[in-house]
Image (cartoon, rainbow, N blue to C red; front, side, top):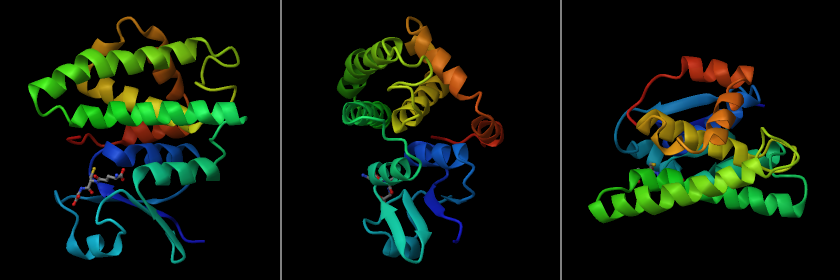
Length: 201
Ligand SMILES: N[C@@H](CCC(=O)N[C@@H](CS)C(=O)NCC(=O)O)C(=O)O
């Protein structure tokens, strides 16, 4: 089987969660990072929506839309949660993490900025903190005793906020910072992060 390819821009953005998953599981993949600010025409024509990320496994299979790429990888690596209740909470947390991440890039007016800073960030981080600290089955995983897509999505957004805003949002949420630290003790993740080049977004 050929090595999969993840096409995205040269930034973390919507490409980083799949990169983290593939690295965590030691899956070799082509991390194609488009340097231009728009998708080159030849690549655009091949993708279903003209947008990135786009994940190509072989001639028979490719998938677009970041949610679907992450869903596919979560099925492949059994990151969905053990019971249907766990799976529902995983999905809740993944969507909240996406809202937090995409909200960060949408702060282009004072109103949006204020809502993001005063409502979105504290509400979502409080919920993450509550779920983590009330998980009786594990202190290192958000849902049950298993690694799930929620761990990857939340690690990614905490990592993004720490990177861009230092630890300002986490002063009263040490459990989230502890999770962020703990997640990086995985050798494949720490190796990936050590060699990750700084990008603009
Ligand atoms: N709903 C899509 C959004 C994808 C998206 O907006 N991609 C942006 C980069 S973050 C893009 O490809 N922009 C270039 C373009 O639209 O031409 C997803 O989640 O994958």
